[in-house]
Amino acid sequence: MELVSDRLWVEKALTGDQQAFGELVNLHQHAVYNLAYRMLGERGEAEDAAQETFLRAYAHLSRYDSDRPFRTWLLSIASNHCIDRLRKRRLLWLSLDEPLPPHPALTSHEVEPEDAVITNERGAAIQQLLDELSPEYRAAVVLRYWYDLSYTEIAEVLNTTESAVKSRLFRARQALAEKMNGAPGNAKLAFAMEGA
Image (cartoon, rainbow, N blue to C red):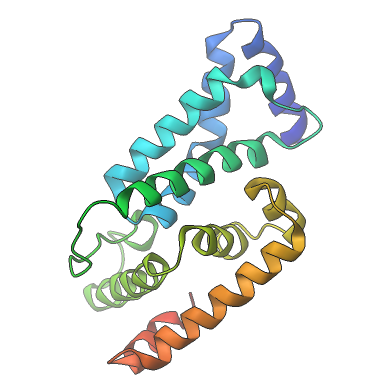
């Protein structure tokens, strides 16, 4: 059903209907923002990346292959843009000791304060582990475990092969396990990863 409505909105947008593209933005903005946030780890930068993703999608809408899901195409643009931003970030000197803001989905006004602290610590620990992965590994992990995409879909989004995706995920899991086991306070990180 989503594929059909996406195709209709794309067709209308290609005729110059800006409201149709606005509907595509409304349908997919959360998925794009969440991917960007998990990739970049910073709320403001994720918002910028999501906006840039939609600008690029609009500019290149005529290149969209309607046989593919629009969401997959959009996430491909977003992940490639985030990888580019991460590569540029390496050129800058940034402190890795600065705490990350909690993910909006992990906070709620209805939870008890202790639960909120645990949730925020868990989110920060997970994000810190993700931040230590290379951009390619991070993209594969986010697409697999946050978006539950298949190896085939991840390969399509990242423009690579399924075997390369499997290899990246395997190496990423190894790196995460080593970081959890070798980090001071690893029991805290292991606790934080439970239920992630």
